[in-house]
Amino acid sequence: MAVPPEPLLTDRLLRSWLRCKRRAWLDQFGDPDQRLWTAHRALQLDEQRRSFSSLFPERPQRGEAAAQAAAPAVVGLRLQALGPGQYVLQAHPPLLQRVEGSSRWGSHAYRPVLFRQGRRLTREHRLVLALWGRLLAEEQQAPVSTGLVLAGAGRALQKEQLPLAGGLPRQLDDALVRLADDLQRPSPPPLVADRKKCILCSWRGLCDRDARAEGHLSEVSGIGAKRRDMLVELGIVRLEDLAVADPDRLAAALAVHGEQHGEAAAQLVTQARVQQRGEALRRDGSLALPELLEAPGVLIYDIESDPDARDDFLHGFVRLPRLADGTWPELPAAAQAPYQPLLALHEHGEPRVWQRLQRLLQAYPGWPVLHYGETELLALVRMAQRQGASDRQIAALRARLVDVHQRVRRHWWLPVNSYGLKAVASWLGFQWSQKGVDGARALLWWRQWRLGGVGPRGGASRHNLRRIFRYNHDDGLATWAVALWLLHHDQA
Image 1 (cartoon, rainbow, N blue to C red):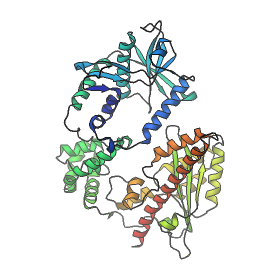
Image 2: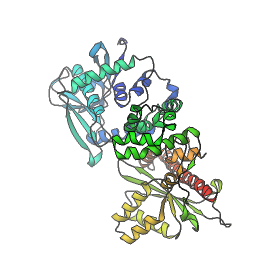
Image 3: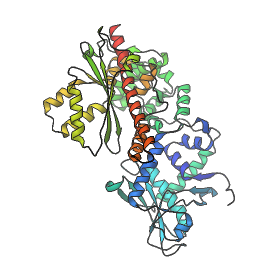
């Protein structure tokens, strides 16, 4: 086939553009060496595979020969046609399902199948499915009236038919024209206002550097898209502008959008000033961790989860006793403290996990349980409630857990753009022993371990489990690094 004229608009470019216009431009013209591998894409493909396997337990057949043979499921078919403005459109639907009808392949036809993450259909899902339907109709010379959307897998597989008529074709044409226009730009589009979802993008490293260099307001902790728009309307377009703003005047200007925005003004100005200066500022002079004054030791607790499956599959603990001289271990010594991972396997049942957690907690009476963020508290309390714990037991559990993240936010302003564990611990100089690992990578390793079993892949699978433990252990040590910093400043 002859090489199509430029620009070539693909379903992957459309999907990227619907998420972020800058991302689509970088996908087309960016330096590939600047891309970061992300586990989120691998997780999505794994979930898609499991979803498709639930719909078609037998392996789909490949290519046009399979379509001509009326295979129930077809993969590997590349679709191409001219779009608006004579742009060449190209797509690779991950799965086609045979349906009733007639086409150039015989007395049957096909429709595209899309796997979605999340709880509801988005504009991205609708327009990508519309593109597949349009190109498939051209290829099979028969209309495609609906697409099939899947979510979940196994017995929990959800199916939804999406009509591809109505206003969708017009919306798709409009999106394709605008995508083509953006790809004609000599430089990438500006950074998006709300960069919270950028963690999922392979270009996040490049955009993070650009955001820091230009003082983008999204770099200020506490500013999302809506608040940024409010500040830009007031002429505050960069971090430096916010740092020199008058808090009282800003509060009055923001209060017209709601009392909560006016109340946040002084905090935003202070946060911007701290980040501009690069120095921490004390917010509350009281002790940040009074629970550790007389404690004989601490348990540092971190959970690894599969949020889509609502599965907390690993409860990890670092057991850290106080030293003989009454001081707390510094990080090198803490790294040698016992680490205890508790796996929560479905086949063992939650009652067994709860019993093991209770035994561990009861073995160290008077030891506070440190964690970072609300995940561990919420998960443990919900498990206790499901297992019939009394109100008194749950109250005691709540009193014992200490959220280090909450104490940092309550007592300090830090020169960081996020108060998450990675950002705060990295600012303090802590380094994870495995480069580029995050919760998504740990979840991918978990699924690979569950698939590995004791067969030929067993050795690699066990290695994945060790990687998960190492990452979880490091998160516990990172939590302790932050707690130590708080303790040292309490004693200063």
